[in-house]
Every structure is written in C-alpha cells, then in structure tokens.
Length: 197
Ligand SMILES: [Zn+2]
Image 1: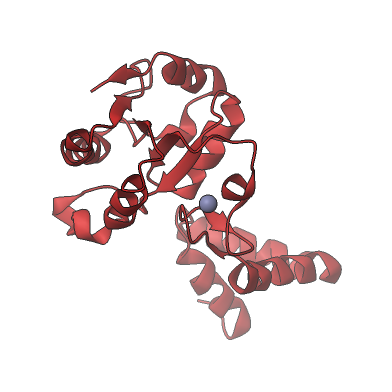
Image 2 (image 1 turned 60 degrees about the vertical axis):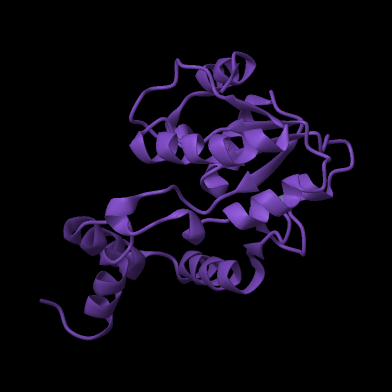
C-alpha cells in the first residue's frame, strides 16, 4: 500500500486492540502531520510505560515501585480483599469511592475455550495471601459474564473451607458486560448490595 516508514507505522498501529486498518491509517497520517513535539511526547510515553510500569508484588495491580499505591496506603484495611480480573477493574472500583480495602488482580478469568485455567491466573498467590489469616471478607468482583462467573464460583469453592466470608457483587451490573464499562453509581450500588455466596 504505502512504502517504508508510514506503512510500518500503519502495520504496528493495526496490531493494537480495537484499531482496524482504517483507523490505523487515519492515526498514521495524523502523526505524520502532527507537531513534532506532540509526537515526541507520545513516543516518550510509550517508552516510559514499558520502562517504569511493573506489577505490584503483593496484589499484581500496575505499580511504579515494588508495591502499588493501594498496597502502600496504611489507611486502607487489609481485612477486606477484592478480587478483580484486570488492573483496569481496580480503577473502575476506585472511582466509586465505596471501597477501602485492598485488591488482588488475577490477570484474567478462567476460560477453557482459550486455554486459560486456574493455574494461568494468580490464584495460588491469592490463596497464599489468604493463608495469613488477616482477611475476613473476600469480595469476588470478576466480570458479570460467563468466564467471570466461572472464576467466582471456582474461587468461592476454594476459599469458603478456609472460613473466610465470600461475597459477590450484587446484580444490577449489566450481564455479559465488563466491570470497567459500568458507571460509578451502578458499580457503587453493586458493592453496597454484595451478597454472601
Ligand atoms: Zn498492590
């Protein structure tokens, strides 16, 4: 189609999630005509995210040091632990302002069709954290879709024998949806109305 650098950029952009060939082409030509300072800032941001951002050694949220902001905050309670699929779900729940406990990020959900089993998620690390006896309630905030429900069911079976209260977010969340797309009010209410499983 195009030659050299512009086609390379279109190809790279086209590999990003949610970017089709037409969008890739539009972004590439936008970059081409943009102010060099703006493009440099974008390039720096891309490089920096790979250099600086890593996963929290405690909860596997994104972090810029050993531990993420939530794990470093001494005002938060360690008695309530909220299990989510991805770091973006932490952001969605933080936006509600309803939760003052800590998180555990699984890194996905059980999905046999795509070969994702319990061993591919950070479930072993979760059970180790629960083994310290500090956690009194585990909130299962996986997505309200088939994979999220399967993951929640699996975790409830594993954790309940440990004598820890296990709760699931209340209904009202759009079924089949992603936690991150729920508005703050709906997600906040789902939190308040969580039920024991
Ligand atoms: Zn953390």
